[in-house]
Amino acid sequence: MAASRDFVSRKLHSLLGVIPLGLYVTQHLTVNHFATRGPEAFNEAAHFMESLPFRYLLEIFVIFLPLLFHAIYGVYIAFQSKNNVSRYGYLRNWMFYMQRISGIIVLIFVTWHVWQTRIQAAMGAEVNYQMMVDILANPWMMIFYIVGVIGTVFHFANGLWSFFVSWGFTVTPKSQRAMTYVTMAIFLALSVVGIRALFAFV
Amino acid sequence: MSEERTITLKIKRQDGPESAPYEETFTIPYRQNMNVISALMEIRRNPVNAKGENTTPVVWEMGCLEEVCGACSMVINGKPRQSCTALVDRLEQPIRLEPMTTFPVIRDLAVDRSRMFDALKKVKAWIPIDGTHDLGPGPRMPENKRQWAYELSKCMTCGVCLEACPNVNSRSEFIGPAAVSQVRLFNSHPTGEMNKEERLEGLMDEGGLANCGNSQNCVQSCPKGIPLTTSIAAMNRATSLQTFKNFFGSDR
Image (cartoon, rainbow over all chains, first blue to last red):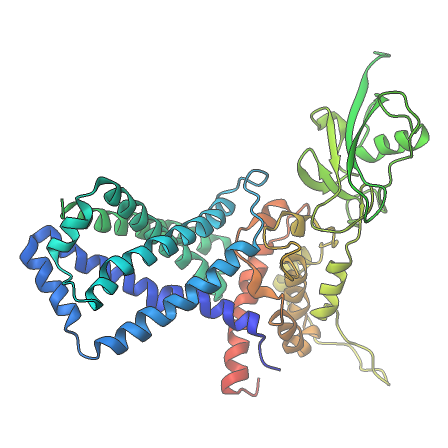
């Protein structure tokens, strides 16, 4: 008997969130961080990324298809749960709740961000330092991007914790607690990287 | 002795599976060392509500009265637990009693926990030992394994972990933490281990283990202190390996 579709979808959802999406987010934030070294450094790095060979295949298979599956199935998962943090205010239950809230925030943010950058690029705009300066000149946009970046990084870091449980790597409470610290350190570190990059465009 | 001391109970009642719930307050005389069950028995003895009106006695389920059968679970002051070990002297008043929300209400505080027993059947939570002849003694179990497996055997199917789980609800088919832990128990048994794949397949079926969202409320709520999240993660590992074995092939 094969595993049910439920089982395969859930495991795949968890895996895709880390590989490739989590790795992609980390790489994306790292490239953004070039902005702290000035416009030329950022433009050079962005140009390197967009001139990678097999760019469209990479975009489709590393970003868009995994992202679509993760997002659509994620919304289904989020609305299936009946949150109860008011009655059970334990740390992990809060993380469970925040994972669903941050997931919805990320969905809104990424949809907007893809429209504002990748789709504009497809329609002829050039993605460069100046584009981000223009976007982030609006203080509301800046707030939206800060919330979006922190939400994304949290969703990835906490999702990484769940991935280690869901695939059966961390079984003991001790190892799970250790991973809580590791993943929250990842959350803080990537938040700093992301926010520093954002303020480099101001 | 204070003659006038009383206990107030606010009970969420429901006359039948389809009828609307309503709240009824009862005031009963205080006695020492009461538990919620003896308070409910007092209401049954004299079914008069706080307004002095005659009413029907409150319905609830009970069995062992020593927290090993799991029948008397209900939500007491917001927390699901067994009413037999809920001591009145340790509860804030008024004591609020509600039926567990994850399960269909039969009447008042009595709920139908069938979905838990169906889940146990689905994952084959038993050890097949019947044959046409005497199969002899089974393999021995290492003592260190017996010790942790014994903890898992304390599960009484009371429903508290399902009540606390945000992913067990009317929108999901999730079998809940209790049945997952039982698979770990029977798969750790030297004879039960011979059928471990069948139980893992049950966990990998629709509504199975993958529906867990790791809120870990179950382990915090379990009245028997069963390491439910350890069981879930251990079964996550076992089903992950089983998936690879099924797909790529294995003789074991």
